[in-house]
Image: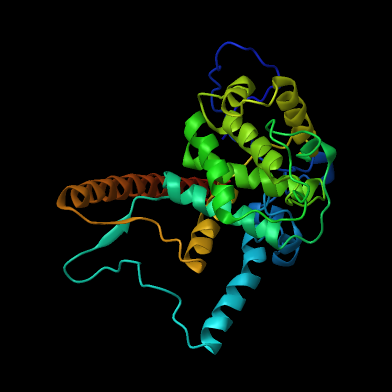
Length: 341
């Protein structure tokens, strides 16, 4: 997952950055000097390399799939207070807008982990950033992300820019403008959130009113280069944000990469965790993904895909069975030879 990342900028056109395969974790293997001759080389089992549950909880969620995402933890306080308030006031959570399946109609949404719904995903990512800002621990920041020192527009930055928390709608409009103008995908939005939380963890900083725009812009810039085959150059973002210079974009990208320790790898398990946690965040805040009735045409497509998957896994099971039988026969032959000798 990803492509090459470069800070070099050309004012002409965007390059095509090809996807590169996810780097495999190196599996430590003990040398033959450390093991006895009768046991042979020892290959560590994959379960031995996984983090224990208690360590995974303390690990960086952008690196380890079992560590809880930061945005979901920060949102739980508001969700609990909202539920408690509704219970104490005997108030309903709002109008029932979510559609439910019945005997005659089945509702399904088009959002999947491989093809998320763009609009809903951007709303959820904006909401996750909103909770990051609202429930931040402190106001730790760096000058490179300070909007007062590096403004994104020529308009005067308000004096209270570092005090007033942005609303969810403002964050959503900012992200939607960048994604719409650069024609980015929903998957890129999820990777953006992964890089954002990785930055906050690695650099030990907070996303707050004075730096959220530049942090989000840096994460989107990096995610678009890593994820999308058709990369968006820094100069393209300068055409979207008219008053920002290419030099400023280059410097911000360079600092972002250094703070990430050049770790731009996003494992598939981490990506999937962020996708499903964003769906949980949507459910907790009544942000439903668009549902459509299941039509005959789509039902036939789903059935065809299901048959294809069943045939594929059936073939895999047969090949695994053949390998197992072959191994058993090999062991039987060796035992027979040992008895005869």
